[in-house]
Length: 275
Length: 270
Image (cartoon, rainbow over all chains, first blue to last red; front, side, top):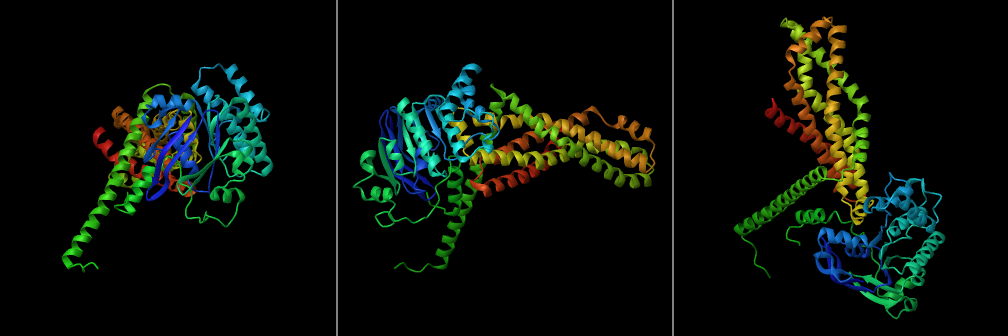
């Protein structure tokens, strides 16, 4: 189970998360929706402790991630799969090597067993004939499918997907979502799916949560989200210009986990006294 | 309504603002220095403990060392040629043209070989490594490694450190040889010095201590380049501009540090 409790995160003076609380039960998949730049990826990165919160905590199966030692955190992460927004495939490795990488580096499986598992995952995503290709030789949809295969190859119990269909055409997007739905049905995965692909994702997930203004403003079963009574979720799902959400692009989504020190320090130089 | 500040009040307020700004800047620099120190310490720890990614290290030796040989030879040959061309007239005035060989060899082995080869490798390989690691950071590949429970330093930094430590002394040695041959071309073939004098005198003046000193220098420059270039790439800011800035800073900082380090190593070794 994933439990996020009163999570706060700022980058310099910019408050991204302002008391986010969320609960995902075992075997449940939750879609996390919200405007671009509202902090969905930041929230997701807290769930694997790629980012440290300013306040609040994240519990995975009852364990507070902040309290885990490096070894314990590794063990927890090994039960999780994360599909990055940019797919994060290693350019210098082939499709096969990319998917085999976590098995080669983190398990004691023999090369025969690794091959069997990798080819099985590549077959699931329909790329068994692309094993020798490099990521640069693949289309956007294929890259996402390879990334999905790499995410699933270690049989994770918890899966976090950060915009797996962004930038893809509707046909490929639906194919990837269908693919994920079948994997979820077979493996009974727990996790969070960040996506803008509404209402297509409602058929895959059990619940829908909406992040807005740094807070979760709605959590509803996916069956009800399509005709939600929550005005914000309803406006988002219907794509209405008018409504409680004022869509003003004020900033881009904060960047990855390596930068907080840099940003905070630079902010301290620019704006002394601002915490 | 607040009362207007007196001159003394304004002075105090300006002073406080100045101290705050300078203090914040200083803290920022100190924190960065601390982070760079931690980065080096962790890298050295990963280099000294298994598992070592030797295949990656060999690949990097090929990239940093083997692929630099051509440009190093070219640069070295011209350095040796110009050194001989500039020194010969002065030595001739003093009637000491027989010392051309030792002069070229000692200046190259002790100083120019290690420094110029390190500067060239910084420009050719250091910049590329900083950019590559920076792109891996912005593409979230480093995060992906971390989530797989792997230490990114072992995969991205340690192989480069090992490769620089192996390749740079060898490149400096190749530089020395090529430059001495360049000096031979000008001194002997162009200016008419006796070949036996050019090479024969060298063996009297070049000591093993000079050669080892040059190699120590190269190894320390290798550590420096790997540290600075990998660090800059690892902590790059997002986007193309971030990677471009990181690459520039990596080359500039490494080059300046090489020259500064050169002074200290020279004073220690020679």
